[in-house]
Image (cartoon, rainbow, N blue to C red; front, side, top):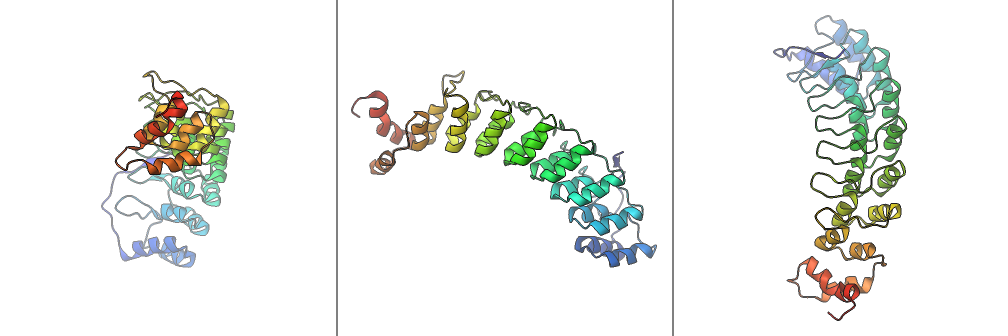
Length: 304
C-alpha cells in the first residue's frame, strides 16, 4: 500500500543529518550506531519528505537499505512528489536494491504527482534489467504519465531498444499515443533513433499515424534531417506520406534546408557536388531557396 503522510515540521537534528550522511556514503557501521542509539528514527525525513531509505535506495547502498528495513523503515512511504524508495532505486538502475525492496513488500502502484511509476522511471532511463524485474513483480506495462505517455513511449523517446523489446514482449501497445496523439514511433523519429524506429515498425507501428498538428514520423524525420530514420521508414513503405494539408516529407526536408535529405526522399544518392554548389550561391539566400535553385533542374528538367 502506498502511503502519503501528512506533512510534518522537519526536525533536522544533528543525529538525523548524520543518518542522511551515512546513507549517502553507504556507511553501514555509522548508520547502525545511530539507529541503535534509540535517539533517531529509521523513518527520519527532510522537509520534502525524503526518507533515509529513499536516499540509500537512490545511491544503491544495499546493506544500508536492508538495515533501514530491518529497523522498521516504511518501504512504501511517498515524499511530497510521490516518489518512493522503489521509484528511486528503479530510476537509478539498482537491480539488487529493487529486488530487496520487493522481498519486503514494495508496491509498484505508487505514483508521483505527474503519474510516474517505478516502471516509467526505469524505462525512461534505459535500465532493462530493472524493467524486467519490475514486470516480473507485478508492474503494469500500461502505466502512463498524466499526459498519457506510456513506459514504451518514454523508452522510445530515449532510444532504449532493449527496454522497448522487454515492454513489447510483455504486452505494451506499440501505437498507444500520448494525449496529443504523439505515438512512440513519431517520438523516436523526431529524436533520430533509427534502430528504435526499425524495431517499432517490425512490431506493427503505424508509420503514417498523424499527431494533432498533422505531422507524421516521416515528416518529422525529414524536417530534422534524420536520414537514418528516413531510410528505415522508406524501407517499410516507399510512400512520402502526403498529409491532409497537402504537404509531405519532401516539403519538410526543403523547409529545413537539408539537401541530402531532399535527395534521399527523391530516391537519389546524396550528391556531394550539389552540396558543394550550395556554397557558391549568394549568402543572403535561405536554405530553402538554395535547395530550390540547386534542384530545380533535377525536379523540373529545365535550366535554372
